[in-house]
Length: 85
Image (spheres, helix red, strand yellow):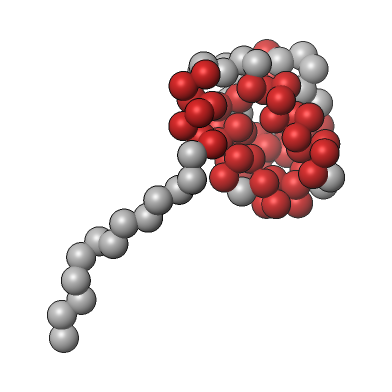
């Protein structure tokens, strides 16, 4: 895991908000949350879509290609069983 604080070009103010309010301290956690819920991340960090995209491209360079590919795949939900009355 790559801590966000080790990425000098990632804004310190965003690091603080992510860690204190959401418990997100790694590049992997940020990337996964931001790709799965871009609008929520934009709201949390008060970013425009283009600003978030810039941060995602920055972080992507620190991540394994397989991880990036897995995060970008659509979420598939499966039923958990049958409800019987």
